[in-house]
Amino acid sequence: MGWTSTARVSPDGHSAPSSHRRLASTALRPRRATGRAGLRPGTDRVQLAARSATGAQLVTAPQDAAPQDPAPQDPARKFDASRAGEYEQQSRIALAGYEACHELAACMLAAALGPGRAARILVAGAGGGAREIVTAAALEPRWRFTAVDPSEPMLALAVARLKEKDLDERTEVLRGTVADLPEDEAFDAATLIGVLHHLAGDEAKRAILRDIARRLAPDAPLILAGNHQAYANQPLLLAAWGERWRQQGAGPDEVEAKRAKILQGADPPPSEQAVADLLREGGFGPPLRFFSSLFWGAWIARRAPDAP
Image (cartoon, rainbow, N blue to C red; front, side, top):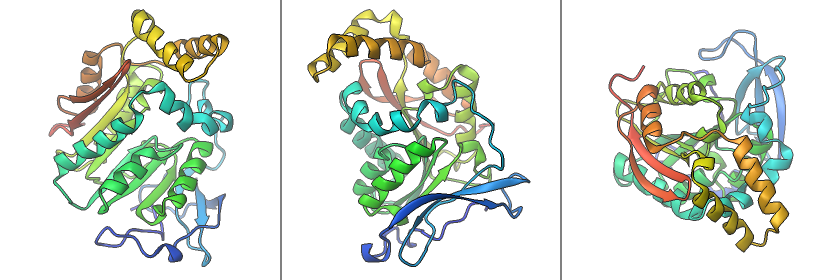
């Protein structure tokens, strides 16, 4: 396959002793691609290289040799260094039940895959605190993860958290998009948490779902979570969301600024039916909702037999 990493999980899903895998630093290093399967010709592989005392590389990802400036709605620009630094703390306020959602996501995947089974999990949009991985890894020691995110600052935070939790050998971290992964991957499951409402327009939402479906094994489960109602159409929910910030110490001006930001800076599916339609068009079966918090919902769906 077109992706390599020398920091891998052992066959039984358990990590090596932490003294053999503690990482000293992170750096981005460009290297010319060698034309291996799954990489585009003329592409540089940018290594988010977390190195051990022996120089072992943790992660790799392909990027264009001369990357173009992202479009204004590109999540890689949206989650710049300033926003990345505050992301996880603010997510815990914005989403009441943050921990419960991630724990239940791991429970739902385990129920779908089978208790205690070894599995490879694709985590799309994994930057920031890597909460999906940290939570699931603690509950399922035989799972290993491939984490993908286009934002360099968000991935740097994720790598730091994975090192802190001694999860670096169970996780491969790739700077890029799901579409950059080779299509001959066959992950056992995937998660897409807190991503869809940051993508502008239905086509971008369908595209990432299709890209995930193409890299899943038949009937593999997907956890999808995010906001799914038009904010302006639910004034009471929007007011309650603002009250949550106030109750956590935000002043009136800060609450108003956050309300304006969410109204202008996100594009959630307008209804739960819209979520189901996007999943169907993206190659998945009917979703089952297992969590809800104001605008936020979380669902599990399986890759459809006729996925494109």
